[in-house]
Image (cartoon, rainbow, N blue to C red):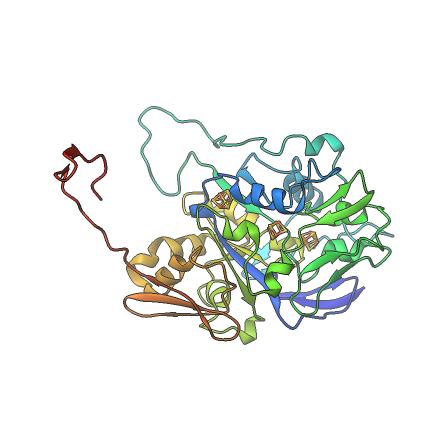
Length: 376
Ligand code: SF4
Ligand code: SF4
Ligand code: SF4
């Protein structure tokens, strides 16, 4: 075991390999407040990459309803329960990561889901936490709540799948940090499936090897965002690059949201993988649940987001860029009227107005002699 620094838990930790960071790290921010669980992302990935034999129950992208939804079944509660106390002291995690809690002779604390755990991808869909009693009013955080959590592979800085593979068949690309399975080298031992706490590696029962989200790297190499991002109906996703905290740039959208405004947070950072998909937490959910899922900064992040329109024009502008371009956004610039996105070469990808123009038409169309159903 080596000692590596994990900024998400504010300390060094044990990991199977030494610390090597890619030249650039694939990263994204998902705004949970905007997801409508339409599953267009799920289908976009499924029809592009996993429509073959042995891939029937494989969802590289899935969207689950929290608190009861999970795919595969109870993937999150099982590892959180097994790990034991997860105490934070400010920004420093004082519990054990899944690498530090590994049983003797194993590299990672994990578990293997049963086949039946993959049978119901939409279990718990739209189920709310709590009951609606008479006289209840709408308040924040809400006593009765649920929200949608869209998930893909996190292309972790310290991937558990990679650490666990006895054949070294999983690797992290040095040019973009995307984590891939080398199918020729894989022998289907399923150690990766067991190790990944997010359960984002899947076993193909037809080819007998493991498969996982590839971050749509062919699109990324052309400067494009992944399929599940460009097809997202709710415009909840933004793909870019993340820097180390000490190198964070104000004009890098992911850096700005994660490091500078701290409004986007990793999923279960206490597990120790330094995952690179970041979430703007829902604003209507009680703090203990948010903290368990996104770490100790979750309540503050939700508050920052909730008040952004009152006191943070730059943050509000950036949120408007989500879903406005199919290109990977390396840089952004906001003015009083517009927000613009730029690619790696500094080429402008899109400029969006901060206020959409509203056209109001007369209620009666005198040219066609008919009333209008929609006047704006
Ligand atoms: S989310 Fe799982 S599959 Fe993806 S890189 Fe991390 S450990 Fe590997
Ligand atoms: S990034 Fe690409 S491969 Fe990964 S879940 Fe999205 S569409 Fe599928
Ligand atoms: S397409 Fe977007 S809005 Fe629809 S479920 Fe997926 S992440 Fe949510």
